[in-house]
Length: 135
Length: 135
DNA sequence: GCATAAAGTTAGTCGTTGCTAACTTTTCGA
DNA sequence: TCGAAAAGTTAGCAACGACTAACTTTATGC
Ligand SMILES: [Mn+2]
Ligand SMILES: [Mn+2]
Ligand SMILES: [Mn+2]
Ligand SMILES: [Mn+2]
Image 1 (cartoon, each protein chain N blue to C red):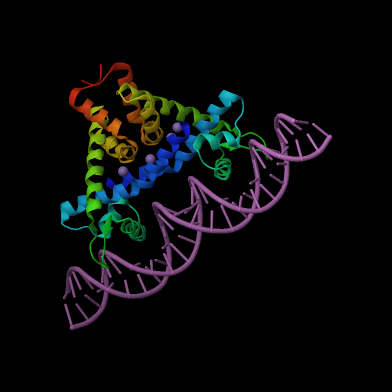
Image 2: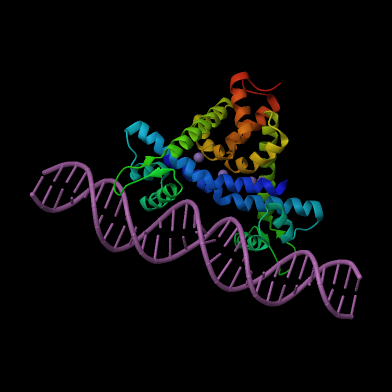
């Protein structure tokens, strides 16, 4: 029992950066038409070298494509992951706000919490947002 | 705004292992009178070498003391961190169960979520557990 | 009491995620 | 148009947190 618990948390963290990056890339493309490394540098507050390394890993893992000095594109898989991550993120953030947490805190906390929310917990959040707290 | 968000998540992760370890050490001492490396090997499902490395870091950071081949002891700081972490963990887990999430899922999800829950969100959880969902 | 099993230590490796510094390419405005 | 600023690349470094393998120390049971 207990052994599985921490393995799940470690697995969640292994996919976390990929989820946040594809989400940010999709959002930037939706907003400005294309996503440049510098957009991600600003978004994540890391250096351009770090973004470059991370994008190389995402490309290795089939989530993005890039050509030298060109904007970053998402693959079909990257777009699917971005859509799922964004939806989950929105539900978690809305749920925190519905709890009475300030929008600012909800934005901060949801950024970490989202990656540890299982399907079952996400469904519970969705149900409560729609039908209210269980009696 | 956005830049600070991900910094907070990265900071949460930096303290996560320490929090989980001191919590596990305190629980083991409470249960069996002392905590051995092997207790942590079983609890976290990592190798003995990994536990050894981690304990060395905790000692460097003033959270535990060890003598060669002796059980692991918590410092005063370690005990304080363990108590705070355990309390926060319990609130998060209870809150998930109150949401209607199964105890097993609540145990798994809370293990990751706990580290990203701010004081404000923790207070909202406590209030809802006591006074119900905000109208 | 001693052999062996269990526990602990140490050395060395790897991937991730961060950094700085030096360089190249592209973009833009005077 | 061309030179400087911005953006992107590459190399090299480090901490963390995981691993295996080889070794030493302690505990246990016969
Ligand atoms: Mn996100
Ligand atoms: Mn996130
Ligand atoms: Mn935890
Ligand atoms: Mn996390």
